[in-house]
Image (cartoon, rainbow, N blue to C red; front, side, top):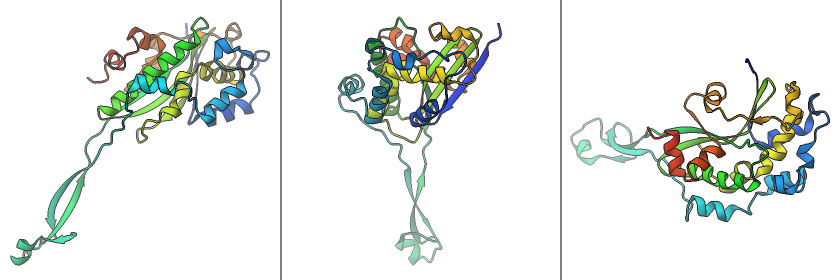
Length: 270
């Protein structure tokens, strides 16, 4: 069966919220408003407004748990340039022996030699079927953040996205992503808590995206908002860039939420 693939990418959560709030529900989801009506036990928020406030102000309630799960002392690593001292015709100080001999390279200068940086791009999928307990999102999110931190401590620069929608409805398969961190940025725990660990990122903002996504046309979506797409080979072939790695709740759970085990499972450090 040939599926229609729908993709939409946002450069930030701010951009996503702006877009989904500015467009009406599509025809398929015209009478569907689960993004607003979902209860607290399912979403861990009382309303869409509360979800947006949590994003804007920071989801700090689980920050201590994440810090414990990631590291007792959250550290940052930097890739530094290696400096090499040489002599030349220009520089910041004279090289006295060469100057006495009348050699042209009678000045001292320092050259920076950039070291090669290992880079990796990771996509964290947070789409889960309705039977998934809300607290499981938190546990999985802690593990995903731990993966990013562990890699950076090992000298990697990590590019990070969240796939807030990875599901199938009828003959359509939809993929929605947001940039969370680029290679140059250091890991900001508070910034990542909501998009990676709070169920409302998927069960409110993600639902609102589906309700308003203009390319959605298959009526299969209106019955339960579709179902989780768990075929990793299909995801890799159709949604991931080359050398991009995918983590979802199933993978973190199978690896017992251990960042090292998840890294081994993904075979990042070949």
